[in-house]
Length: 286
Image (cartoon, rainbow, N blue to C red; front, side):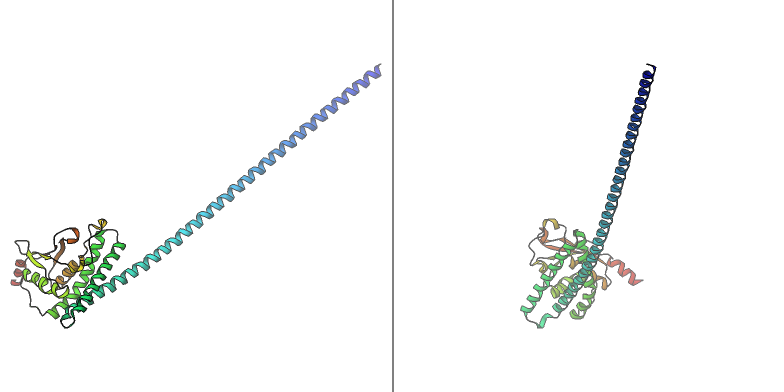
């Protein structure tokens, strides 16, 4: 009986040890699984981190390529602008040279046929129109186009005065009114084939107007576009007159007061001499 009890006790202890052993194995298994899950989680985080780094490297690479592409485009744009600027300067230079050669040839025209004069004048007018059209493409503001035409006219005027004085054989003018009459009756007739009328606009005798009933420079121009309402199409004439007067020591402001292309009845060019005749006489007496 006692032996049987001992066997039963031994059996229970054995079962208890086995149960503890199973529990221990179960805990170890759970621990291994937990470690495995943690390891997988670490690997997953590592893969994600590598993926983020890879995406970051790709993004930086794309940005770098974009910056390089923008830099190449900017360099290309600058090269194109430089080429266009050179072409414009060359075009303006050739056009100015042609206009000067035309105006010089007009002063030598008495012995040539009238038909050749007409063709030459029409070619000059068309060339001038092409020049103004190109300037309108190059500049957005009308003020810039007007200033460019004035500068070109000034450059022509300071050279054209020598040809005018050599071929017209005019005498020295003693007043502003004589000077303006000479411009209207001789210079305009010689180079443009028209004779504008002259009017004095001030009591001081230093403001005059040249009124043209017909302007040969606008023979092929119907009207200015609505977006070019401030354009002075013939502003080259103002620069020519100003440059020529400056070469004979007469400072003047020249501008358009009326323009048929803008709906006025006539074309009127205003000339304002900046020094009064009395001041000039006073200086000579001194």
